[in-house]
Length: 196
Image (cartoon, rainbow, N blue to C red; front, side, top):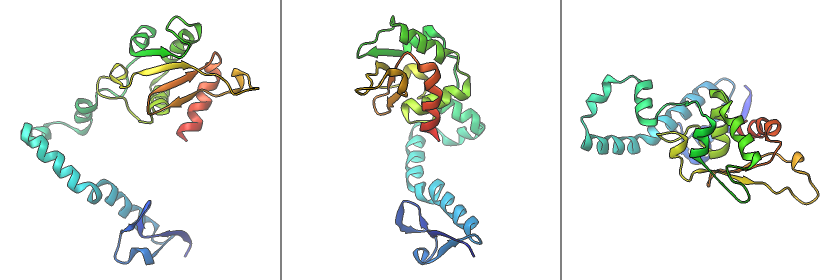
C-alpha cells in the first residue's frame, strides 16, 4: 500500500503510541482512516480525560452538573463563551480598542480602519479575530473584554520600502495590530496568509 511517512504515534509526540508497538507500524492508504480515528480519540478524549475529570469535579463543587444536561451544545457554548458574532460599530470599536505608538482614535488611518472593521460580516470578523489574537474566538463578553485590549499602532516600514508595499502585521501575545493607510486593500491578503 501507499506509505504516508507516518507511524501510529501521536503527531508531535512520538512517545505516545496509538496502538501497541505503534512506532513500528507504518500508516498506509489502507489504515489511514484508523490512524485518523485514533488521533482524534486521543486528542479529544483519552489524552485529556484526567483534565476533563478535574474540571468536572471542580464544577461539581459549585453546581449540580446534572442540571447542565438541559442545555444543548450550542446553548452551553453560548453560556460559556458568549455569542460568536456581535455586530461592531465604529463607536463600539472606539471604546473597545486603544491606540498607541503614534496613533489616536482621531487619526485618519484609525478612523478608516475602524470603519473597515465595522463593515465586516461574521466570517471576516472571525478571520480578523484569529489573525489579531491567534484565537478563533473572543473571550466571554466579546472584544471589549479582550485582555490585553486590542491596540492599534503605527507601522513603520523597513528602510527603502513604502507603507503601500507592506502587509499589516500583528503581535498576537499583546493583541497589537500594526496599521497603515492602505489597510483596506492589504488586510484581506494579510489575514488569508495568516489563517491558511
